[in-house]
Length: 128
Image (cartoon, rainbow, N blue to C red; front, side):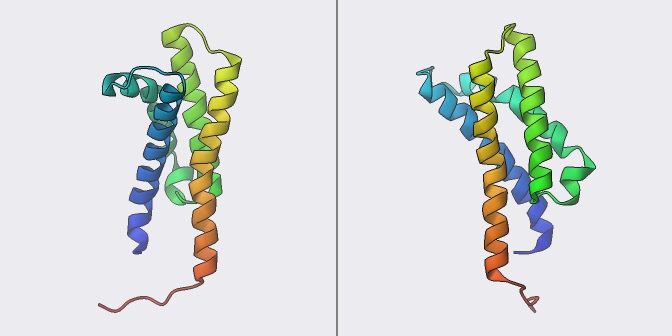
């Protein structure tokens, strides 16, 4: 894979992770399966991920675990703040489960990516 594709793929992986988090949460609570409902659930967390991606720490090395920690902190922190602001409540049980779920998703793909990269070893540049 060409290194210039890594930031775009990392951003896509983070956005998919947040949408999966929101979708699984809605399904587990038997909430309606509408796209509008999913968007409403995911939006505060997507905004948080967007803020994280605006930082130089994430853009410098988007597939690193450090970047994942920044994305996790912003996604959860801003997502929780917006959710609290709009709904007027943030149950502790939701915050704990959401934080763990987001950590698994946002750090998990980065950890797997790092393992795969180490197993593949250095690659020679392709000519073509």
